[in-house]
Length: 142
Image: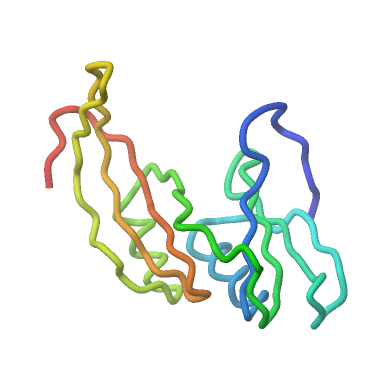
């Protein structure tokens, strides 16, 4: 377990609070190959937290507590994958449930560029919503 400073700019981490810290961490480790890089606080207390690296310094901070954050949870967090089908399957095998099945989207932007992606939403075992995103080419279809 080693915390690494890999980026100078961008998002450092997204934080959530869940009722079962260990189960939630295991879900992200098993479903998305997240690596535990730091842990602090006291087991069973509200200050107990893990930092998981979802890839190249994209950190997820998880606190274990039965009390929700006063600000609530996020709407969703999106995780990039290079293999949607395999990642989606692994997440389901590790306790996630289907929110929306994977689909292809070609989203025209106001600048005229088109963003091509395959995406799907999952409900993680801790209750948070995860969107998986895979970049695809302009000819992709389901």
